[in-house]
Amino acid sequence: MPQRNVIYRQREAGRPLTDLSDYRRAGGYEAMRKVMTEMDRDEAVYAFVRSGLRGRGGAGFPMGRKASFIPKDSPLPAYVVCNADESEPGTFKDRELIETNPFQLLEGITIAGYAIGAVRGYIYIRGEYEHQARVLDSAIAQARAAGMLGTGLMGTAFDFDITLYRGAGAYICGEETALLESLEGKRGQPRLKPPFPAVAGLYASPTLINNVETLAALPPIIENGPDWYAAMGTEKSTGTKVFSISGHVMKPGNYEIVLHDTTLRELVFDIAGGMRPGREFKAAWVGGSSVNVVGEEALDTPLDYEALAEAGSSLGSAGCIVMDDSGSIVRSTLRLASFYRHESCGKCTPCREGTLWLERILQRIVDGEGRMEDLELIESLAGRMGGRVLCALADTGILPVRSAIRRFRDEFVHAIENGGDPRPEPMMEVAVGG
Image 1 (cartoon, rainbow, N blue to C red):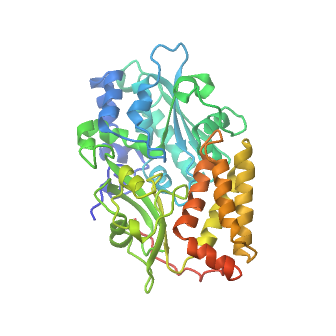
Image 2: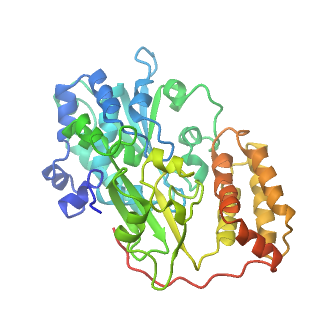
Image 3: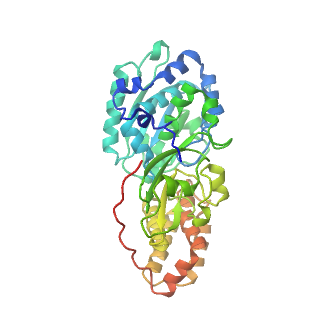
């Protein structure tokens, strides 16, 4: 299936665009010039709305609507915050964009800043992304020296600069309010909402928070027009989406495709090279680990927000983890439960205690000490966790566990009745695609 290089401008150029002159030759900063010289702020926000762009970090909330929530009459300064805390298992799309095309992200943040009248942008980057942070530091310095950041941008009265802030490797700081707490120098734990960040975000000021891929989509949307972007995909799932595909496929990597134009089967078999020799498809976590796992019945599902929801899963961050018939659903579910237990910030009791007990119950099933009633106990425990916490960690953490037991219940029963779940065979090395 064809790929579209909308977000990944560097692939269209055929080389990394880490030098400002290379980025400008590839058409960079034309969108920023256009928005600042031809559009007022309301027109810019309306362009975001018309494009149909939805947040690419996982929630899928319309970006233009979120920008329109920023109050125009607030006496406090407004901010743009870029969530580059890419910690969702199976997701590595933002990392590639940052290290090979950082200026498109900076341009997108600046365009968003102009649209909402912000005074500064912040990039909150994952603590482990040391190389990517150095690339961004260099890009920010180049942009500032060239007058693309600072005062009087493009000869206008608009002043805007960007600050890079490195996190400390906490998954919870991918949640927007925990990110803001960390950015303010506090413990990274979720805030009670309302008020929402658009009204009282960073330093209690109006704040627009979006993911790397979302903000990087703004330059091509402004440059080519919102109707051009909206024409790709469907009415509710417009534009392109970068899928990070990994696991038991022959060509793991990042692939940018038009939403709805490709099915899960085509992504796995045509684009990512299919299963290893002699193996068959078994399961996939299509939107990262925080979604319902699906089996072969979902292979012909188009990859968009609505179709995946109808299939019982979600697009999420599009970190597609694929398992073939050699893999263990039981062990994989335990691994995910262990991840969410470790990454819980501990603020909410249902999450802190619930994730711990999910891990313990699954561990004893794997170790051969499970009981049939454990499956009902997990279901009951999940029901006591969902919807009773400040953020989505507990809610999303129970999705892969609950769905695995419902979809692959026979494997859990087999592990309980046969003294545990043996380790699967090691995976052979595969080529890197993308």
